Image 1 (cartoon, rainbow, N blue to C red):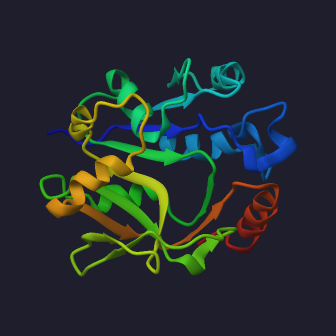
Image 2: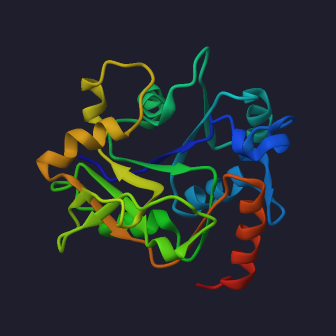
Image 3: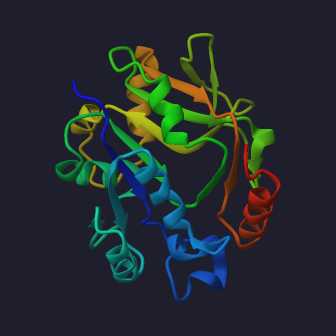
Length: 231
């Protein structure tokens, strides 16, 4: 079992909550603080020294053109159907390899340490099937839903709507994906395999996270970066 050296960035969504902003571009190319959302995520993978695969579906050609400025990044275009997080990750395994893989959402902006470093520091590969990065709900900027998980003293997770919020960043073994037959599926299916086995873990992120799902989220993310530039 090798060390994790690759990351998957999920960038295939339709961005419908962005309204008119996604009429002429995919959500990952919407700018926050002068940089496309996708570039915020790509910088994290580059700073963590990781190979990277980005998936795309909606207006995929625009993502493909944008990535010519990132020659070390591979693109996985999902056609004809969008594959969701689990299906997208499974389809990219030929590029990602067999070692544990990081995943990131492209619609998140972070204020604090590199989330990938936080996951790498807490990773125990022979004990964990997946390690999810969690954020307390009072440090989630622009987030209006409930929590997702609670962790015990060892970091093992249970689903709990009063708990912390899954950030979209994780580190996981991908071998369990082979047992899922669907082409399009959420990584929740893999987590459901790991939960009863006590192999789904979480670690708390020490900074802030902006959920950039709506136009208001752009403004809130930019304010967060101004307020917490050196968390």
